[in-house]
Image (cartoon, rainbow, N blue to C red; front, side):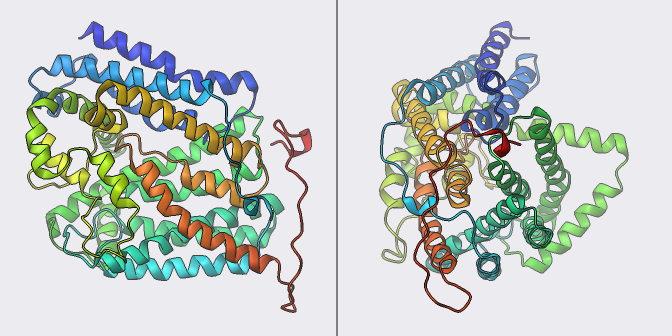
Length: 483
């Protein structure tokens, strides 16, 4: 047992409890509040649960790659603490001065369901084509020799599936229409089907979270703890289902196809059925043990951060040889260049595999890993990078939340933009939050313009002048708007 590491875990726990205390004090609950999301999806499992396990003596093959595993774990917990403090200081410590959001996002409170379904259908077709290119899901292709220009066209269109799902559920929750609820249920079923055959636990969870977020913001703000707990249980069930069925799927995929063979949608569906059969054959105790070990293994970011801090100096030359050095600056530079204009643009999405090979000695690169946002900032700019980078992230998230949620309550497109743009993969890297967010703006803008245009057309096809909605109510909302 490492008492210093345990003390650092406790300090992290105090900081990570702040967002929950803040919502309890204000009696306004939001699972998707940026700081709550950071604590629930990253801080509690990755730092507190796994950190406690490691501090109590659990073995970590990953951290043992560092020359001083004990010191590496302590540094990882200490730097995580600094990162959390700076993130929350940036979020709550600064004002929200800056540009407002486009009025287009707060113009319509509802859209034509048929048009939303049409967007979903187009996205579904694009997903099928993406799968045929070997670039759909986490396990459909292990090769890198793909038609990246065609893929760069298809990927933005596939995002419309999640966006359409969100809008349909948002409108259904607002109107409480049985027809809209039925349509929303059908879209959920299709999305979950694709998520299952993609071999991605995150895709299954994301589908459920789109729905939970849509209901949350259709009835924002939530004033009852039992409401958010109910939705939290639904999200947790999706997470458990993904862990229970997709983990065996990946094992079977590796055994039957290896890492360099493209897997079709049909073959992937067959693997999913085999995975379900394997899970069904497990006893109740075996399932519980399997889930516990799978979750604990999955809570690996603190280990990745520790090994990053412990091996950084010795691996700097190898990083440069691999082209991993200064990755934040490089990704910001190349992400702004469309591949259709520069087909030979270097791939910037392979950092996770390179990290696994360089830092984790995974020569076969069987999975993608990251140094965490804190580790990525430290790799690029040292401790000043952690302090300034995490604080800046907090300021940006505060601006998005205030402008798109608090000031725009009741507008589906504003809420959709927040959910699409505010998700940070804290266990991966720093730059994707900005670069992938900027790329998401293109399909979001196209969808917004088309939905706005069709919502102003009457059923006779004549153009209606834009209707100006009344300004959104300030926060908090009147009792009749509360859930």
